[in-house]
Length: 99
Length: 116
Image (cartoon, rainbow over all chains, first blue to last red):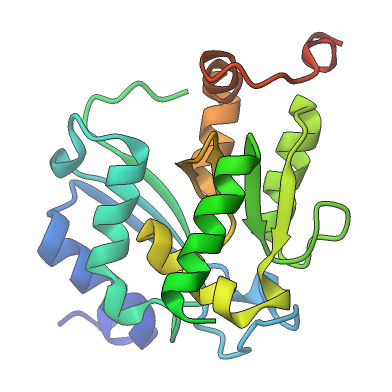
């Protein structure tokens, strides 16, 4: 384990390992946006509650947006609700047209 | 209300309204950034819709997730069909697919707003 991964917050690391194992992404970004939501209604205030995931996976080829999001949501089901309060998703397949 | 009764109520609600958003807060007073984004997009498109504030009913707040097998709120329904959550609606709007869907489903919206 590298020094960088050692210093990752545990929720972020859990998201990364779950998505890597189930969807074999060719690109994966996990951004902790919890600080943007600190203090808003319903925010748990843990600092590990709001995440944005940008993921590119060949598993998404030919799938609708709903189906892609469902794959991600299922892979992270054990984390949804608690500790993850909100999850913004940007899902694409290699070769998808990007604006 | 049992989960079954909640699902029946949801089914009836999305069947009797062309466009329904299950959200935190109301269209005029959203209480979550993601729900607010959806309200803003639908307002921009100029489509009439029914807002259901899930914060007012714990049964609906949980029941809508099992109804659609979708773990997050907001959720948009058009003519009884689940369309997606905030990110999907924003992407569809940006690519012109949201108004395309409304056209296909014969749901009226204010076309003058989009060209203005």
